[in-house]
Image 1: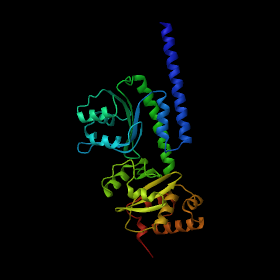
Image 2: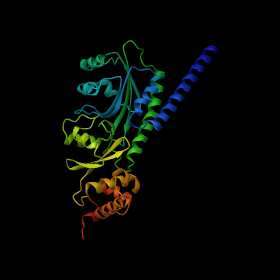
Image 3: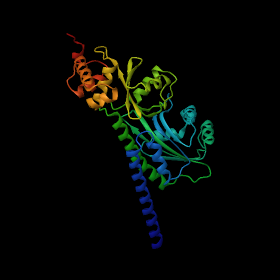
Length: 340
């Protein structure tokens, strides 16, 4: 009996050591790889600890009685490019998805093709999704849900309790580090969180997107299904920094290393800033210095200073905090409409 206890203790210590190494590798990836490939690379590290055949992750809106759940940003490992669009066709009937979205923070597992909807089972068979393990988290700053789902095929064992515990702990670290990366890239403090921001690669694929930005794009560019920006927006990414119209709103594109930050702003009826002035003001409110803005926009620091002075005067603000608030307010400050 004692021998059995000692063997179990050694196994537990071995698992703990392997998990600690996994988390250390994840932290290194967050520092070295950046946002573009962090989640995919992180899951590949976890795959060495808890094997899986394929994986899917991203941001999803919660369903209600009339609207099915929808994936707005996603990534995948060993699944076809069409995976998300195929899933959207059966999303309203997917009981496993419903279970995960209604139990945030909990690992949900399932096995076999037993969904009440046969179309969902056919989708699962097509992609060999025999064993499933998923966890979702609320993202109050985005207005969406973050999810990670792992899959195994029919001839593999089901995910067990120990693997579920490791998955839950690992995803806590994965999500936290990913959120830090997004916040560092956006660098914008606002009472509204970052529901009207997005982060995209230069090819238009999304790394992060907020619910308000999703709604605005879908409203103004019908047929958009998420994950990759509409062609009309992708065509402007190489021109960033720039401002494009999106219905009654302005969509500002600001370069950030290998990414572009998207920011949605409702146009006020009062003071109207020129596109270049607005871009300078947004970058300054986001925490960039005069020199950084000048380098990004290929301007002189003196020109940046002039643009900012004009912005302060037109918007009637006196500080960086007030500037950020005015840029994101649907109505101008009280003094902004008074022109001498």
